[in-house]
Length: 471
Ligand code: FES
Image 1: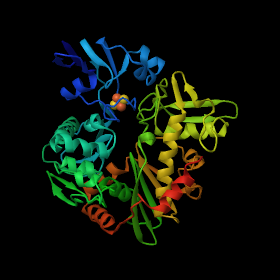
Image 2: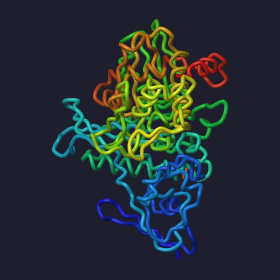
Image 3: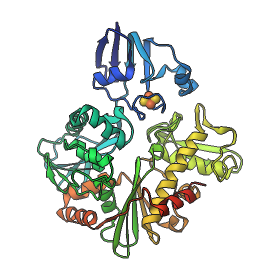
Image 4: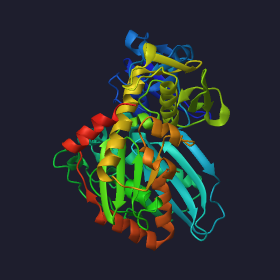
């Protein structure tokens, strides 16, 4: 008999028992506990790290190879590879990735903005009278246990039905609204990529995953008690439109707005013409899918500098280094290149570089970064050659060093002086729409007027991508 007990930081627990050994991932899923499992539990990504103790299966070589020495000593296991063979305790993080502001209790007229990302879900509460944000929460998308990207979620919908993915998402959003003190019936704007919005709305997203990639709907209407802005296409969602709105794309010209998530979604306006495209970037720029990767939380290395002799690292919250987030990865690559430890083609001397005690960067991390920055840069160059201004938004972490972005080739050097970093531009745009019908109209115009450029199969994009791979 195997019994798995999940312990939360607040002292609460959940327990599930089985007649035979069970993976921690399966037991957690049965109990509705979200575990990040980018490869969907195939044991290849190393992303499903969780702290567990008790009667667990012995660690295989493959599992051990995906953990650092410190993690092994701390009792970290891969949830998809470790089996409970008797009584096991699992220690769940509070899945609140970040939290800001205060509860909205006492504020009269509250609106709610929601951004459903593939990796994280952000909810903010806004005072509708002043337009001021009064609280914000970000949590991991509970669908993460079905895989890291939209295709794995679409596959999961085909296997388990849309409600299996919709119900935990809606329950979590309701809980986040409640934590923020937003009343039932509060005006709500929901943005996200087209797949996430479809699942949230209970619409089968399968057509998005199969050629000719026709979305079941592009939204642009009220549903489920919320306004859902219009998407451009299957792969340029209302999140990218909201980011473009926050970037000022409606009122300005020669602007490119780039929303960097697992997909890089780019909307540009040049000479009054709006173009949009999307490129698969992978999650490296969000600090996921890399060996010591993490979100931009306390302890994440977010900046690395080379002073001519050695390197210096900075962490979020000045805490001890425990991992590296997207901005840290970009900055580390630039610093290692400056010090000669990383070649122009991306070969890391020795295959691994220790940035801090137990936190290191590997050759495969560098390769993931090269693919991500190559895809994003090639997408930007494809839709807009002559922009004067670039707005970057995404979960790479605050303090993104634009100099490092230019040095690794993510940002064109001609725009170095005119880059704005918006943080989560999608939720900023959703907040704008929440408080002004004028912004709703502008976002709708952006989405309707954007000409979508399909990059897959585009030889122009392919050749740019190859050119953009090197540092
Ligand atoms: S290694 Fe466990 S989910 Fe990928």
